[in-house]
Image 1 (cartoon, one colour):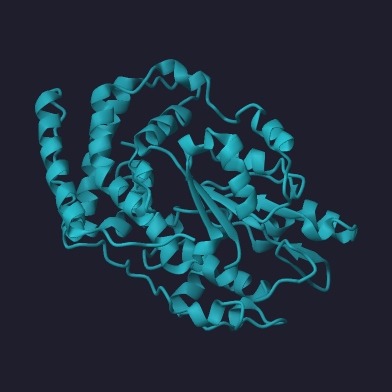
Image 2: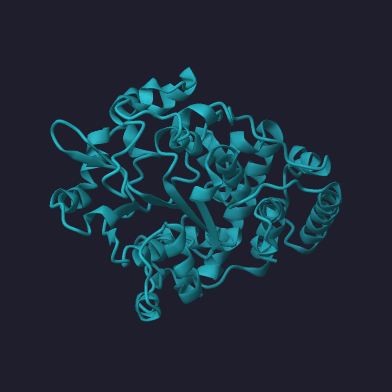
Length: 398
């Protein structure tokens, strides 16, 4: 189980000194034009120096009594739970009036019977982060004999549900429905997953920063298994820059990436100073405030999920950890409560070709040292906080 612990004043003080000092040194050694136009995110640093990053302004805990398994009722829909009106608007009437409070006990996968047919939601979600190994992770989980293959990135919870209805999403789970309808001996153990790498963090369509996807899942599917894989945020950003610019005729280079990062760091720093962390990583204009540099503020997303979602249903790991697949994969199988696998089966799955490694994009060359220094210093306090929250210093990628 994950535990949230406080950042001590001593650690916070060290963060303030080292962060400000090293950035000053950094920009005295870089090109003349490499100047930050805005001050550092002082509000964030100040809160760390107070001894802890405060609980985020969620209604965290409001739904604790109404959404637990003990108080949910069979035959009732989620709409009948005591949910704040503003959160109801974000979840949507169709979801609230269609999904039951309690799923069928006949199956391991979350399913329910309607007058027309059996309907199912995913059992697990590989929820993030983009360009961190989610495709390979999801593919290998799908290789487990208990897991029914599915489409990876539907982005329904974060994007498509505002245009495509619930039926569209449920129809994407039709493969497991067909298998469960056969009522075979092994049907009860089968599960299906979903691998949208936006589920952990993308809330741009909500028009508010009061709630995140964690609140929605805590209401609709609190027993969902949620997995997130994290990569050094500087490497993740560069990988995304190369990936989304790989179209023919789009000339990208380490030098252009450096210019992009200077603009992005300036824009996001100004936003952080003016509006605060959650407003900048969640509000709809965040894409314009530094592109996707905000996606690397992992600690904000992790804290939001830990605030409201059952810790036992969250599993976090790093990309470098996933590289040791034969060690990492059995732990994920155990977390998902899937059937035990032999060592031979695990090795066979782990030895399959790694998915979505972006060979073509690697040709533009490595990140410039000055760019890495810039990004490492920008992300440092957020990585330190993530390491504190998860009680694992490896999340600083130092």
